[in-house]
Amino acid sequence: MNFNLLRTNVRLCAIAPALAALSACPLLVHAESVVSIPMTVVTGSRYELPLEKVLTDVSVITREDIAASQAASVADLLRDQPGFEFGRNGGPGSTTSFFLRGGASTNVVVLIDGVRTPVDGIGALFAVNTPLSSIDRIEIMRGNAGALYGDGATSGVIQIFTRDPESAQVEATVGHGERGAYDASFTFSDQFEATSYAMTAGVTRSSAVSAMNTAINTLANPDLDPSEDQYVSAGVAYTDRLVGRLKANVRIGEGETAYDANTSSTATHLQLRSNSDIELSWARPLTPALEGELFISRSIQVTNDKLNGASAQRAYVNGEASARQSTFRGTAAWTFDAGNKAMLGTEVVKAHYVADATSNGYNGNRNLLAVFGGVTRDIDVYTLQANARRERAQVDDSVKVVDRRWTTNSWLLGAGRPLGDGWRASVNVSKGHRAPTVYDISNNSTLAPEVHLSKEGGLTYTDTTKQMRFIWFHTRSDNAVVTYLASPYNQVAQHLRVTGVEWSGDWRIGKATRVNWALTAQDPKNTDTWTQAARRAQTFGSFGITNRFKGNDLGVNVHMSGPRNNSDFDSVRLDSYTTVDLSLSRKLSQGWTMRARLENAEDRDYQLANGYNTVGRNVSVLFSYSPK
Image 1: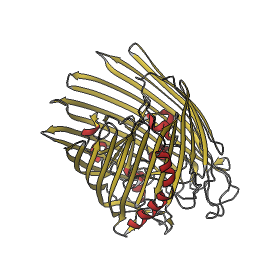
Image 2 (image 1 turned 135 degrees about the vertical axis):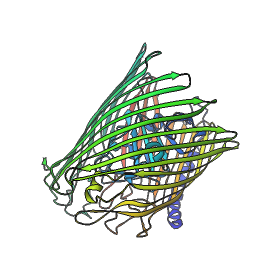
Image 3 (image 1 turned 60 degrees about the horizontal axis):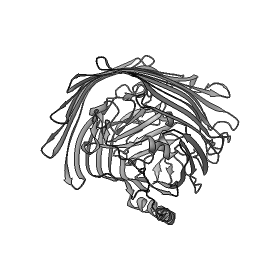
Image 4 (image 1 turned 90 degrees about the horizontal axis):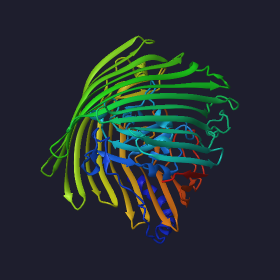
């Protein structure tokens, strides 16, 4: 592991002269801050807390960060975060898996505006195609969040907050990139007396690459495989002293992604996807110290696969898979004794999954009923946090005639104290669960929920211009569900263990330079086979520096990853890689900003999954307008 880290450091040293030259640019006094450190977060406790009091490992990506990144997707945006990796079968828009702290992609929960996003019947995430222009900020909680968010949150939570109808703004963007890439969006929000409203609409198309490497997959079609999405979201909020706050949000999206299969050099494959989400919420102070909230949502996600323009006729009869999910949640939050907080709530999630496959298909339900609570309290110089959740899960499959039910208990205990001069130490221990998916139970009806036990210790530093985090973490599961190659695939329980450290920071130097970094060294292992967990590196990280020079924001961003195993089904080893992105941002006039990006400037050839291509050197330019 140390050798791999040394090798990535050597690659970083190779571009050090460019970084040094950039950081040496004259520092100009400017009225705007280069970086704004967020003061409050909600994901680490389920209620709003000052960042310096949060005991779990939480970081925030602001709207300004999203715009400056010029990232092509949520996955590309998150790759700068400590502990985060992803695998992808081709370019942006292709099948993508998220990994946090060495855990499986099924052990990460993605929330949008506090609602668990649907997954498919095998637990794969649908939220990877959430348009960045619709996002206001993202909070990432690393570590076992089962006591807070329940089933499947044993590696962490990624919470996406969409544009808030309660803030007035106008923003329009239009951009173009190589290989057919383009991006256009429009956001508008305003307020009239007690009613506020917002709308975002847009279309985006990724820079096209041939999904499969034809040198490895010789029967794949060598044509370009683009991905395109169209979307619209709208929200309205009404606030009244007696009624409280009523909010409604609607999101609708459609997209298509071309992909390859190693079957015919002339075959064309296309996946069509559609999603619709509606959310209604009500919140009202019940007393000066007590606030209640009710929430209900309905989500529908459907994908259709096409082969040569017709419904795919291989594993899926009609090439369709779908997830339909309804969520209800009620919470009550108390504020007591000068800022101490407590929360109690209940949540019901009912989901139905269908995959019309001739083999390994499913037609099942996955229902959750939970009660949860938590408290954060200061005692002398210490801050203490305790959370607990009791959850009942039911998974059934009418195709395989399976019906299983489990009741699980999750908990988290944390403590922290300031050490002076901006330093703070914290520790927490936690237990979480992941119930088997419909697909898991369809293949092995004897499986039980995974149990994950975790420990974490951290040292953080925060002031008005910088923050740094040093985190040690350890998690293990004695019955993690692992897929093995068989006919059909066999789901078995095995022992998994991850131990690691993270070092991250975000530092403003003077008034014109920003430096940020995120480095992770970990050891994700299957201790039954003593093999490294698939597609998760032992060392990886990022380093970025931005400098304002003569009205231009110039940036260099470096991403590094050590070698990884490709999958549990083969012995292929993915090589380590380092990529460099360059960026330029310039305010053209009042309201207008131009941003340009050179992605993968060295045109590195690397893989996130064996046999699949990634985006090479690529130039994109984006113009945005906002009167503020």
